[in-house]
Length: 195
Image (tube, rainbow, N blue to C red):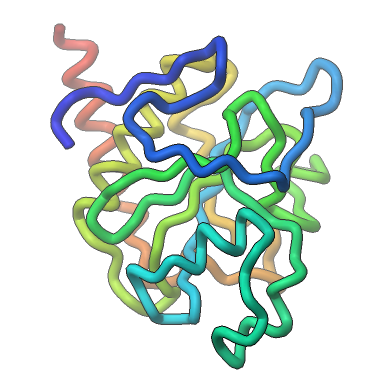
């Protein structure tokens, strides 16, 4: 992924992403802007990669009998704005102007209901399995594109799901290399300032 990612702010769609629009989203509250980027980790079933089940979960048609762990999650109404697969491929489920249902009960710096003011990005992975460099590269490019499209966002306000729902959520987990992501973001910002 070498070309810069672009977002159509009229539609809220990421132009380079595969579009799999989820029914599990709604409008943000009046006046609410995206101000926070939340990084998640997901695999279905846990620890399995490259399956079709993330799409099916976010679209509300995950078959409960396809895996023993699916019975308890098949009826959930959840989504994210984007999923980044292990190879760095992007799939978008919710337009960025919309409110994806990714954070659940959450709080950021004393402000509750993070879905109202955040963008949810899922990385295909598991808490203790190292994420792929292609995912970090795609994530950094996506964060830069989001910050360019939505001035209310900042590369300084990127957190993990575990940061906004401590004790309830652990993702993206200890395997996620925050220093690597920061170095990619800082390097990209330095390059942009130099041009």
